Each structure stands twice: as C-alpha cells, then as structure tokens.
Image (cartoon, rainbow, N blue to C red; front, top):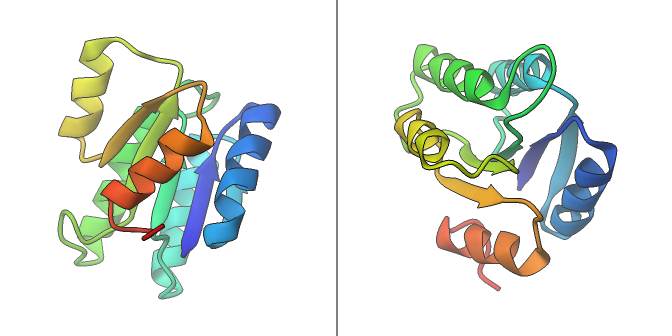
Length: 132
C-alpha cells in the first residue's frame, strides 16, 4: 500500500508513520500544499496513493482545502469518486459541521485525535485496505 501522511505536528506525524509502516510505504507532507503536490505527482507518475491521512489544522493550506484539491486532481485524471485514494481525516477538530463538510468533500473516514492503533486499524479494515 502507498500511504501519504499529512501532518504538521512532528509527534503526530511520527506516531501515524509508526502505526502504518507495517502496511506499506509511508511518505509524509507537513502541510496541505505539500500534500496536494505529492498527490498530484503520484497520480502523474502512475503510482497514486492508496491511503492519505490528512490533518485539518495546518499552515499554508488546511486539510479541508487539500481534500478538495486532491479530489479535483483525481477527477481531472479520470479517477471517479470512490476509485481514488482513501482519505482519512486525522484531526482534533470534532465539531459536527466540519465532520459533515469533510464527508461532503469525499473523505472516506474521520478520526479524532488522539489516534490509537486500534482505531486506525479498525478504519483500515472498514475501508478494505487491510484484512487483519
């Protein structure tokens, strides 16, 4: 599995990388601009990400903006909704409006920090990305 972890907090980035590294190749981005660039390059190279873990509160470009742009890039490359990267919002933002907006912009899952191994693996199973 090809994984992009988008997180500006070093500790959170390290934790999510540690939890996901047994399941695939992990790349990291520190903000939404880097995330959009990495997602675009991966699609152009023919090696799109299977999973993107996307924080919301980040400098330069937040996760909600990055989510919209990544979905736009996928659409421009002929990737239909549901066939692109599985995007899990991984954030401290827990208000219902933000959660609903994220799903409306086509994220597949929403995990509120602190992220635990159990919650993350359960979500990967639900998305069909891992079996165990």
